[in-house]
Amino acid sequence: MLIFKDTKFIKAPFDSEAELEQVIVNNYEYLFGPTSFYLPKAKIKTSDGVGTIPDGFAIDIGQKKWYLVEAELIHHSVWSHIAPQVTKQILASQQVITKRIIIELAVQQYQTDNYTKEKFEDLNIAAINVRQVVGDILETDPIIGVPIDGVTNDLRDWARTLKYKVKLWVVSKFVELNKPENIVFEFPEEFKPELDTEEESKPQKANTGINQYDVQLTDLVNSNLLVIGEKLSMTYKPRNGLAKRYEAVVSEDGSLELLGQQFSSPSYAALVGIQDAGSDRKTVNGWISWKNSQNRTLADIREQLLNTTVMR
Image 1 (cartoon, rainbow, N blue to C red):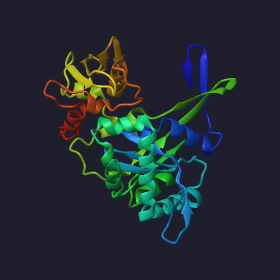
Image 2: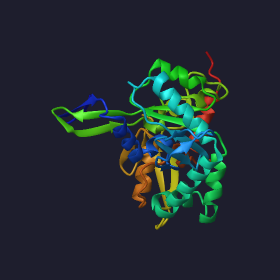
Image 3: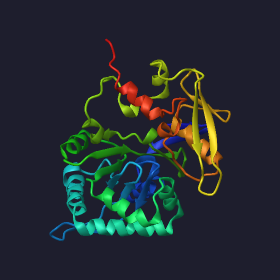
Image 4: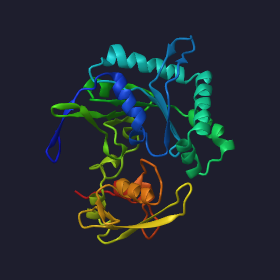
């Protein structure tokens, strides 16, 4: 249950898979990251001409990754619905014609959507290079991205058997008690999947007691990698504005103080900063935005924590 003053929101099932699909289209950055853009459904075919339609394609030009997106509901069978559907999509994704279709969709969106264009410009990717950049990303294996309203054991087990990496994100729906037309959706914090086989396949870190998605600023403070009162900085220049520099102070509870507010998440703090600078961006990765006086990002410091051997 979510409570806002006297208003209560209770968890509810999605009306349909289509409802979940639209929620993902409207909020894709909260799953695929701030340097991603989302392409709509398109029919693709296997080498024998069997057609399939993924719910979309997400391309992360910052991380150089791409996703076949298949929104699902927990009551759908893994074996008779999800597995065969995704298998066809994987096979079709490897066809040359499929990659040409996705490249053309990406170029068209770059040309017609200023929000997408801004992401390329932020990474200093010129218009003449858009096709090449997207094409190079598509030469890598796709990640199977599955937003779903719950994860079963069979779904986890199946995902771990695939050759391709899989990320499962749980997205929840809440409706106002006695006013079900008022709806809110819950997305995971800091883009955290419920299951990430890409992360699981990486070499084991020295600090096995914590993984990347679970690291919080308090962990960095408790490990003396951040100091209470330490100042972190971030500079941001919106597309049609002047660059502004922001300083956030590490508080005793591990939060960041910025512009008179406290933030437990570095990404929320960074988002408030860039919006104050005049950006209309919805998300930002604060772990790579904030830097200490040695010009090290929070992501670098987090990596140090993960690679620190813990004495037992």
